[in-house]
Length: 560
Image (cartoon, rainbow, N blue to C red):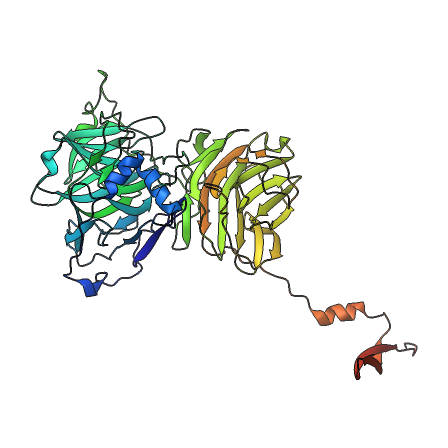
């Protein structure tokens, strides 16, 4: 995977929610920034934590910077890793994000790491990573390397890394290591006694999806808790609440483990990796025992040895190098119910229920495809118009009205849309809208139902915050004058696998008419044997123009 620059923008990240595909673009063993090999840079600044603390949260601080167009540019670095021996983390097919932490951040210094360079932060220094965890993950592992500074243990509590809502968060307190994975108004965590090596690197990991939530230090189990929930991002429309940050944690959202004050860190960090599988296996001898965190007297039920496989249909959407976002829609949202989907679980919404996906389409896209699976509810057709998904300015929006499916792609004061007759199956329907190939087109189950010549790309709205946020199940009355919809809409049905790509996924086949055949069909029934050419002079200013007109002469000869 090549070096990327991730720039903070109003409301989100360029790469917000889009996990980096788990494969390398290059098989080269050369490290990134080879010219800087052996050169270790340093920034001694440490003012960020105080400013964040003054603002009250990480999210509000970076949101403010974005609006001022004064936010930092962050280099995200990965390498193919072939030169780094175990136990260095590798990128494989289950890797969704790997940051080697070799960039020079606004604060901190570069030091020798587990694999190449690492990032050292002194007390009070902060490093925001270039990943905003807005995608739901039913199974996952978060890992990173950490080496404490000499003063790390001087304070009772130290943060390591995580996001402001503590949806993913690691910290150390009074000899114990903690791993949090919060959900809406629910604080889940595991902890355990941990002896961090002070003169060497420690591999810290938290995982979920095997029936437990567990915490690991250098490959050894620290703590585990029976747990059947996946990762669910914060959905409070706070742009940077799911942002992963190293070095500072506000006082928010740590009531569960009993930490009520903000924390700083002190130490070196290397190789931050997120995977869509469990990397560590719980010992069989422990699974049947009472959990180390179990508060109840009842024994822990032994789970099935073979965990339930995530079933995906052959037609399920896949993540590839053209995928900008892929949301499996498996979170436990404030509204809706999880049901069996095209791939794993899907979200089922009743009339009046809706969810925010966390995807904020704030970047222009010259070409693109928006796809999702939809299965109508029993009462879906009982209203004249039903929304499916889109953003409030209808910059991207799908809805059904009077037996037609409509795909909008608005621009400022211009309403582009295509529509076509559709009869949705009672089973799953793959709906897609795309642009960038000279057309704007609409597709259902791989068949094109509408297209128009169209040269415009996608342009986000810049009128107010979160207008480009993709919402499923509700659309206000705004911005639908073009297709003739003037009232708000709800939905009813099941949704799965929302994928947004940077290319058109479907080929628009345009029928080319045979002009000669059409002209012959337009001729009189009589055979045409000859024609008369008439030159008609036309006065045009002082010059004379000649127009050539061919008049067919009918054959009056009687046929034999």
